[in-house]
Length: 481
Image 1 (cartoon, helix red, strand yellow):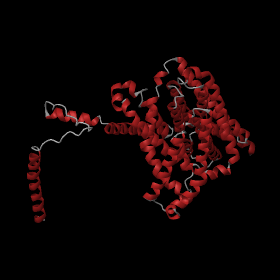
Image 2: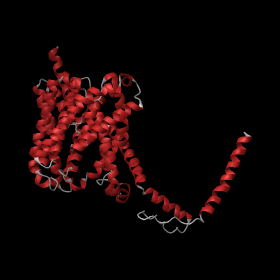
Image 3: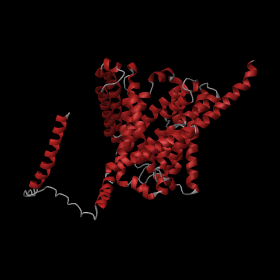
Image 4: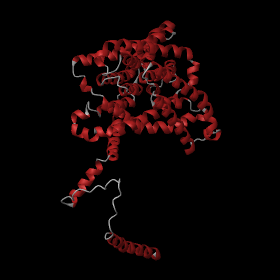
């Protein structure tokens, strides 16, 4: 012990003597010659009046560094998302609805209005590019997770009812959305957007169902095993695939510069889908190996392979011109199902993306949502009209079709209420339309409010229509006796 202490003491003494001596000797060396073309070294500003002032200035400079600013944003966004998620859960709403609301509250609609100085410090315009990129990565991981939750076998078992109801729940609201676009185009489309692009996106925004949110509502209400619940989850799965396929083709058409270019984009999309389904899906179990699929804890090599597949698929669709999230979704859908492999991967992906990255997307959407733009009676009336049309098309179309296939009115209305859930999936589609320059900030805000309103209505409507079914059963009980 004494020997170790003596060695440590000698080392310190040598360092204390040697370091200042070398620095003193080095200060007398001639300065290096300036190399032609090299950037001159930045000269530091004049020293502050006191050491304390210097420390404060250094802290301020470090605090305004882009990485420090991003960390501040992460803390604020995650804290607000968790707080609002818990609050909305106590109110009987899914936590994700609270997280969506938190994103809007952190934007100019509330935070920017109440504390403009703090808002400008936390979310300066120069920091939004980094926030956008991280949020896009979060959305891609989320869509990969959604793709893995897609149960193809369940869809096949109930294919007839699922296809009829889900496609009706797309066709009816799509037509109503297109009709609404006819009256709103001149006033609410983004400058330079043509009616075809605006109409197609309005139709899509009315047609989407939030499959993940719907699944969580069913789990919380213990409806997953009921007729309504199992039918709803199957219809939502078919709806998801159909709606996102339509959206992919719409984006390809909008981005193309000519009819020939549009046709070539669609050919590339179909080729990519074919390669993923008949090439990657069949080859992936063999590339990973049986042993890796059986492991309870996926190895680093397995996770690296999965990440490479997701990123490559996302890159392909981004390069084709239909957005990276479509590739991520398809990558999830073609993941092997053997030995619960999807579930094991999903546990690791979903928790990370939902806690850290998805709140960034909600916040970025909230920064684009300016409720202050609806500053007149006409604006709010139009917003209510959008909500009414969306609900009428989705809930009404689904309920009528379900009733036609043999379900009771109460069950049909419950199914319609579930299919009217839009949630995060709607926000993703709206951001695509905004980025493409199709949706103006005003109509974007209306559609974001519509997404929140229709999702929040799901729980109360389920309770209402479920109560009607209970009352109906009670009235029919004496007759059966």
